[in-house]
Length: 136
Image (cartoon, rainbow, N blue to C red; front, side, top):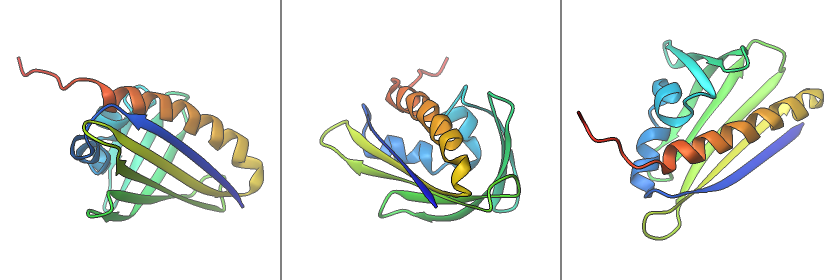
């Protein structure tokens, strides 16, 4: 099994970052806009379309409020196993460490998933660090 680990700092408080991360069906608007271009909610799941055209059915495995952790799995597709989690850690006033881990089989998918997660991490860091938009 290939394990892919991404970690980055967000220039936002943990409450703000967690509010966006835990909003499972707004991933394309709040967490990874431009990386995920569409999200169709299902019952305990979502169908996400990525900017590269890939479509994935993601099932929410759990949300742990106190630990600021969300986990999900991808069903169908090329992976025989896919489990991912994202967890947030306070790093002082107005800063949050974001840790994203994915386990995937077969190993041959590792490089592809790693590249997507690298791109997604850059976009999430930028989106979560952006100043809040003022209502019009």
